[in-house]
Length: 241
Ligand SMILES: [Zn+2]
Image (cartoon, rainbow, N blue to C red):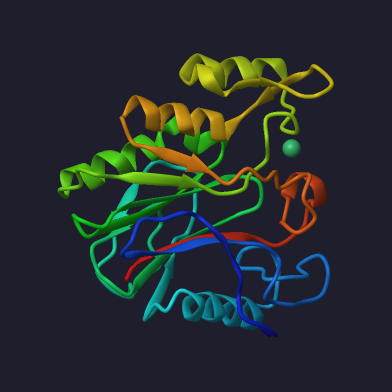
């Protein structure tokens, strides 16, 4: 059960928007989920995960917290209230104050987007497949279709290019779609930098973006699938105040 307030890494979100990124701090459980595990699909006790999500909701002062069923796709779902069925999508948007949106990650890139003047926020989960599928450009398009004109984006901690080794063919395949994502590990082997790719997609769309520069693989305070295999999930959360 949560044993303390949930601390959030500051995302530098604009006034009128609350949110940020969780670490392992603020929750507890047995290894390999020790810490504030927010993932309900990784084998942890569902009651403990629900309690952690409730603590996250309270931490951002929201009335409700919505977490989608993430499938590494590019679908975008607009949420108007607590959904009867969990939305099956990696990107969620809302115009409802007090309705927090979250994604859960362990190396993938959590992305928060906001346009407080238009009264819109969104969250996206971008791993390597989501980068290639274009989940972030899709959510930007959806927000602009709903009237967003002054979007900003913040990327949370994720695996860095120096740690995300992949086969050469996979690095080439990703770089063919998103050249900025081509990377090398510190040992000089082929890699993918998903966050660099997402930042390039946002730059192309003229969305100002910043990044919390922490690597999940290198930082024991964060859950990392690459480092640990079976493990928990951290969260990126955003809500209109
Ligand atoms: Zn790293």
